[in-house]
Image (tube, rainbow, N blue to C red):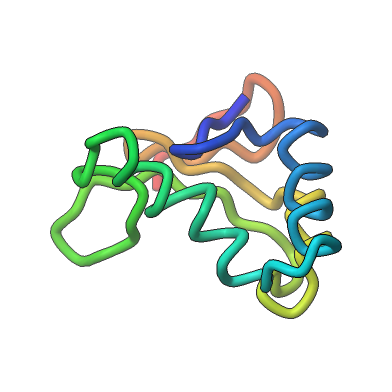
Length: 94
């Protein structure tokens, strides 16, 4: 399971995102809470941000999670350590 700084990419993480937005947090703030803000709180400024020259694992999804945080429920691929995973047990060089 892919791990973002603040929560796992599991059904619990997805439901947490939806609950945060339902509670009034914007989708952008919700995604930041799970990534850059969580990394900062953990004292890990080296993770949680997509930025040129930084180390990053990413989760790509169909749709725009800033428009609708429920897009986080779908995953096109995960890139970890430069390797693209498109399904359980699959890997292809990027």
